[in-house]
Picture 1 (spheres, helix red, strand yellow):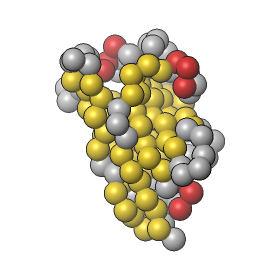
Picture 2: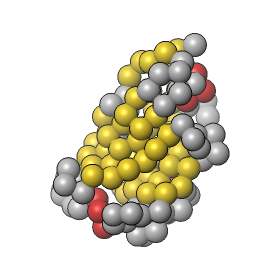
Picture 3: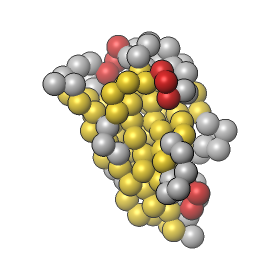
Picture 4: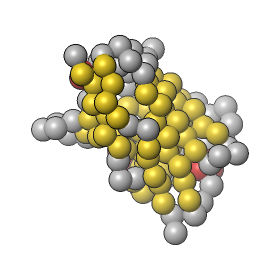
Length: 125
């Protein structure tokens, strides 16, 4: 059964860091693009970052997180990570990882199919 499970969320002060994990079961993450999206209360879900398939795959970031967030994949652990540094209160949201429909990553929700259940990130000021 194909499943994505996010973890690593929590409460952190402004300027702090968190690392989110997206672990896959039932399939190999390395063969697909993986994306991170987030949804804040009262707002629409937005793209945060994505990484294309295979080692050395291209990455994309939303302008709001460029220079602060880094996406990476660990093939051996079948996991994709989102390292979030210099967190701001406006980063507060539920973060979801999603499986891309294609191998090349485009930060567009319609390019992603299966979604995880999400992990809450709260940044206090």
